[in-house]
Amino acid sequence: MEERQEIVHLPGGRFRLVDLSRPLGPTESEPSPPRLRRITHQEGAALWRQLFGIPEAALPGGLGFAGEYVEASTHASTHVDAPFHYAPFSAGERARTVDEVPLSWFLGPAVVLDVSDLPDGFMIPAEEIEGRLEGMGHVLSPGEAVLFRTGAGACWGAGEFFERGCGLGREAVLYLVERGVRLVGTDAWSLDRPYPLIGAEWRRRRDPSLLWPAHFAGAEREYCQVEKLANLEQLPAVGSTLVCFPVKVEKGSGAWARAVGLVPAEEGPG
Image (cartoon, rainbow, N blue to C red; front, side, top):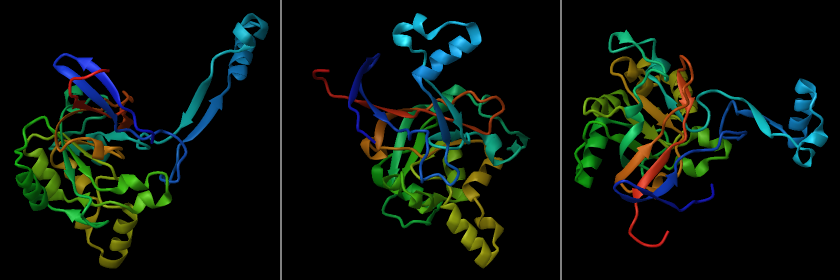
């Protein structure tokens, strides 16, 4: 992904924008990749002729509007999982869909935990998170978003992306949610461990507790997750702001999001 160094002036100072989103399009990193059908400017002009009888010659350069038709899962590319994705009920109440989750959950201080030293398939326990936060000298506050940099993001675009990265265990998710964290993110395909590993483990051990414990923790305590983030290495461990409003998909289990990190920038030109 091409690195952008955009600086914006907002109330409170100057901020560098970091694009944390993956493109929505065909890629080997998705087992069920999105499909895009592109409408050319010529086809756009032909559409106006078909619908309204407006000839191409009446349009500037004889061209109409370009467009795209997208066929994709709402969980493709960078996206938000709503509580309804995990189970029909959360904490004893009907689980909220993505259009019902408060917008405030998708805007707040970001805490980036670099766990890229952990092996692929490792299940992160609560103690690991607690120890790393203590090492940073940071105490979690309600409203913070915790983002895990697993290193899997380096494989985006290749089929192996689906098999890379570590994931959270049930206790790790509950540890975060109990401290007021409502949004947990990862640069991997899933907040849980890689799906092929989970499948192989089931065939070998038949242990239900190892099946997507991070996701299913959302049936106990309500939270959202944002998956397939990009460029987390460009964010500081603390001090940036995450913005990742999801598309308002009616009764959706999830939705695509354009995730952006706002990093305070030093004063200077730009």
